[in-house]
Each structure stands twice: as structure tokens, then as C-alpha cells.
Amino acid sequence: MDTDLETCIIAFVIGISLYLLVNRVFMVEGITGETCSVENCDKECIKDEPCFCDNTCVPGLLGCSVHGIDKCRFCGFDRYSDINCPSPGQSPSPPSKGLTNDEKILKSIIETAMEVGVDNSLDRVPDTTSDPIISSYNILRNDIVSELPDHSVVGLFFHFEYENEIEQFKQLLSNNNNPLINLGGNPIILLFQYSYGKENYSVSFNTSEVISIANCFNEDIIGITVLSQRLSGDIKYLSDLTGLKYLDLRHTGVDGDFSALSGLTGLKYLDLKDTGVEGDINYLSDLTGLKYLDLSKSLESSNTGVEGNLNQLSKLTGLKCLALSSTGVEGNLNQLSNLLNLKILEFNYCPGVKGNLSALGGLKGLITLIAYYNPEIEGNLGDLSDLTKLQYISLSEARIGGNLSVLEKLSKLIYLDLSYTIVANDLSLFELKTKFPNLLETKFPNLLEVNLCTAPIHPGGRPPMKLIKRDDKDDKFGVVECPK
Image (cartoon, rainbow, N blue to C red):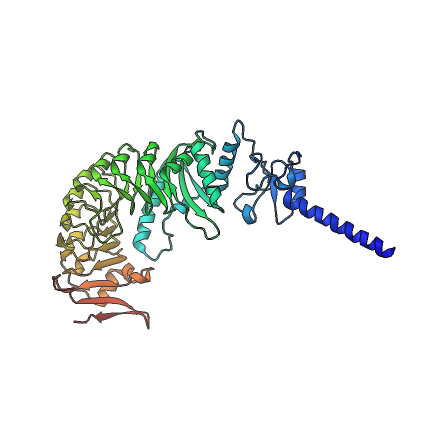
């Protein structure tokens, strides 16, 4: 009899345990009809698996209907880690009035991915980068962004666990025609990033889908920047955002023609580096508010679809950055002489650009001059002697002569590359370190080499050089003669 009683007790305990387990596992998606409240939602959740009342919940939305309680939602752990838990005392999210179930799901997906106030994420390269030239671009970009009207940067960091979630999201976007999100009225810059699965693979989206997401916001969209390289599609779709002031699509697969941008006259910042957007730069000549323009390619060739004449940019007098490397743009340096606000000028591998360095003598604010492999550029190093703000100079393989000492007023120099020119080094090691202290004590150790060529360029090969560089053994500087 005792044995039967003991067996019954054990069976009862096992039955209760199984009931509780089944209730926890399978009641998440079932709704009991009980209305969510702080008391019953919190009571059902444990410390490591928090939940909250979310009035945007609808059947099928990730994390909703915890333990069968309508509007009760998991947040902040495991597969629900992208769902933000409200702060203590924060009111539950207000119910979405007048929205269909699809609109509620789409709104929730976007809000889950959304992070407001992520200005630092606009940096393409962290400030700690070992490349000071890239840092100079970031600093200028920050300055330009700070001059934009009061705005917020809204990060949209979409992450999808399964492929069907991506397809569902795209379908919801294609069916939506209404703004769903209101952030308070300030203009916004949208920063997009997409990933998929545990390995955070990049997800392929296109420009029309970016527009569909932008249209989900009530606020004016003044900026678009995309961190995911697998963005494709024609840039013409983005021209629908006529209020754009900031557009950064570098290193994406976006293509199209410059003509699609001719109506975006409010643009201040345009970065199309290494994209498929090409054409005649004449279509950009009326974007007179531009302060930053990068159309360059990371190729050692000018055989790209970017073409036109430098003279077509002469009206862009507010430009602070102009980057045209590896393009087919042609013209003479004197056609840039009226761009007096330039701080960064980059045109590597532009054989169609000709002229004398003296044409740049009036660009007193110039900080970065990167123009290597341009055999049609000539002049004397002394033509730059009054550009005292210069910090980065690369004129490798240009027909530049003169003595290094003529740059003695350029005490801010950090990077200097005069390799394969006919510039002569007339300074002792002591004088070099004294006149250019930042160059020798730079924080970027991989740029502690100053390449000084002592012979002219000739078709038969590269000339002998003298390198002044750090000695790895005793951390001092020495002179190393190149092989003859």
C-alpha cells in the first residue's frame, strides 16, 4: 500500500512538472484572452528572460503572447535580444491606432532595428585608424555634418535569423504606402546596415527598398548612408528624396547616371566612391551647395565611366573636398584655382589632368594634396611653400623639381611622398627632424618613411632613392641607401 501511495505521489509530481513545462514551451504562441498588465506580464517572466507589455504585438510577431497573455512580449535575451526592454517605470508602448496587422508587424520590425542618435557610426574608419589621410577625410565629414540643420541620425541595424524573415520584410515593404513612425519632427539621416544568420552575412537590398523604408517615417529624410556593401539598384530611386543633403553610398553596388542627381540641389555631401554611378560630371555642375564630392575609384586606371572637364566644377566654390582618383576627368589645374575653400584635393591616376603646381598656390586652406601617378603634372616644390596648412602631400611620379628645404614653412606636415620625382634632399637628418617635427613624431608608425628621389624619372625603370626611416632595432632614425 505504501508503495502504491509513493508511486501516486511521484506520478502526480511528474504530471505537474510536465504541465508547467508544456505551458511554458507551447503557450508562448497561444493567447488565453488575458489582457497584458504590468502585474501579470512581470509575474510570468523570470530574471534572465524578461518581458513587457507591448501594445504593438500581433499574432506571429517575434516574442509576442508570452505564456498566452495578449500583448506580453519577451525582450533582451537569446533570439529576442534585438527587442529592447523598456526602462524601469517606462510606460508600455502606445497602441497603434488605425494600422492593419501587416502595418503593425512592419512598424515593429523597423522599431526593433532602430537606434536613434548614432552619429559616430557615420565614420567609415575609426579615429584610431593608422592611416592619417583617411582620418583627415573623417574629420572633414564630421565638420560638414555638424553644419547641417538640427537633425537626428537614426541607425537601422536590421538582422534576420532566417531567409523567410527577409522575404516577409520585403513583401511588407512593397505593400506599404503609409508613414508608420513618428520621431518628433526633426529631420533625420538614415544609416542602414543589414545582416543575416549567426555569421552576420550581408543581406542584398536595393535602392527602391531603401526608399520604401524611408517612406515609413513621418520626418523629412535629409540623409542616407549605407554600411552594407550589398546594396544594389539604380540611384534614380533615391532622387525621389528631394530634400537630401547627405548621401553616402561608397563601396556599394548602386549604379546609374549622374543625371539622376541633377535635381538634388540641396546636397552638401555626396560620396559615390567605388560605386557604379557614372556619367558626365556636367550633370553635377548645378549642385552649388556641395561641400564634399568623392567620385573616385580604387583602381590604378582611368578607364572608368566618370568623365567630363574640370571646368564643369568651377561653380562649386563651396567645395572642401574634391576626390576624382582613377577617373577619366580631364582639364588643367588652373581650372581649380577658384575653389578657394578646398581642404582635400585628390586626383591620383588622372592622366587627363595637366598643369603646373603654381595653379594651386591660392588654395591657402589646403590640408591634403594627393596626386600621385600624374606624369602631366609639373612644377617646383616651392609652388607649395605658402600652403602652410598642408599636412599630407603625395606627388609621387609627377614631374616635380626643387629642393626639400623650400617646404620649411610647412611645419604641420605628417605625410610626405615625393618618390620618383626630381626633388633634391638638401637637408641634414637633424634639419629634417627640426623643420618637420610632426612628420618624424607622427602617431602613425607605418607612415614614418619619407621617400626622397635623387634622380629623374626615366622609361628604363625606377631611379635610385634615399629613404629616411625608423630603425626597428633601436627606435631611432637613420639613413638607408637604396641599391644602385
